[in-house]
Image 1 (cartoon, helix red, strand yellow):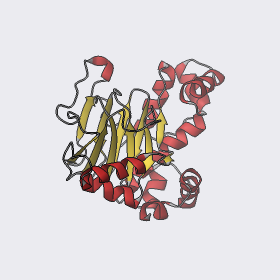
Image 2 (image 1 turned 90 degrees about the vertical axis):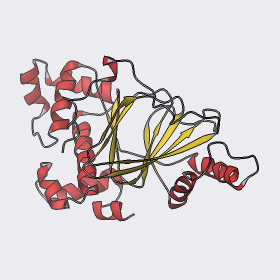
Image 3 (image 1 turned 90 degrees about the horizontal axis):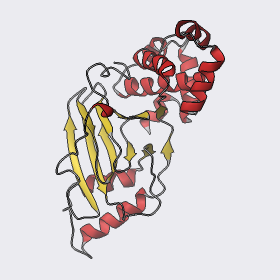
Length: 271
């Protein structure tokens, strides 16, 4: 499965009025906790929430897409989604067990105003799971209310993981982006693309840097990294993933993975 496998069947958020998910973030409590189980490759279509959402994968891998980027979220990571951000969620190849916290905007100061993937500590994981059994508006001073306060304390300052793939709006860059999301192993260089798109190599390079904040080489490595994460998380071998993504050897792929995430694939998933 490719990063962009559903793009031909799912409409853009610009194509329609986006629905809110009824009942999910309705309530007066500071934090509303909601579980959800999804079958393999299940798609939750474009929607928004009035509250910020911390979307956590207890099991499985999810891909969260907004108009400006894609975030691949393995288990034991979560994605932070600010209120009002239109987004789309897809389970990546295996069943997905999600736990969501919908957080009132006055609950914490200085919460991120952009989407990001965060690392969930063992303590925060247990707090998120425990919150699923708490009422939406626990009595002041109760054990449930104190647990929510501890949960909010642990959410502040969560470490951000580099699992973001920024998008571009320029039609020429989007042609390259859509192709590489469908096939991250596509070997074409910017010079190859310049002949096909009728733009100079220098122009394409400037577009990528300006609109994604990355060079073309950095962006292409990132799309390979996120595709690899989705496949490794569902049990594909490092060797198969490395060669399918166009790496000359398993060691070259592992070196890229370690540079990007600070550890080898085996250690990353064992932790």
